[in-house]
Length: 167
Image (cartoon, rainbow, N blue to C red; front, side, top):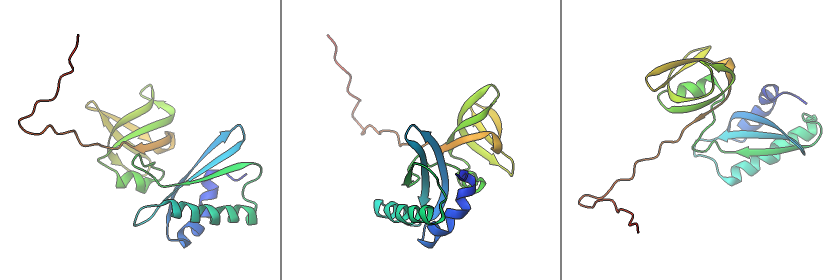
């Protein structure tokens, strides 16, 4: 089995050839084998048809080049609203957004952090949470996702929110 980071340069040309960008690969051990989840994106977004096209081509690539041995499940997905961040350029693109990090090693005694991504450089990111800066080495990040922001519900003018009646 080739590691996920080694798989990416082998898969990326196939995905690019279909007109999509390979954002990254998540790898997870399951009782029935290995789950490989590929995240793809495109200029017009991603549809189910796009995922099916990429799945077929990548599965063929795996079989022809024998890239994955044993039982595996291949899942191709759009990044969704809680978009995963894999590469430095992804972090740069979402600077100013709220992100959630799961860390390999604790930073300031914490393995999970959520805050506004304020800085990105070659080796680290800086998050602000409750007026405190957390500097996190990129190498310490296991998973990162953008936290979707939902608009607040607006109460129409002149109407007070309903109160629940009790008793």
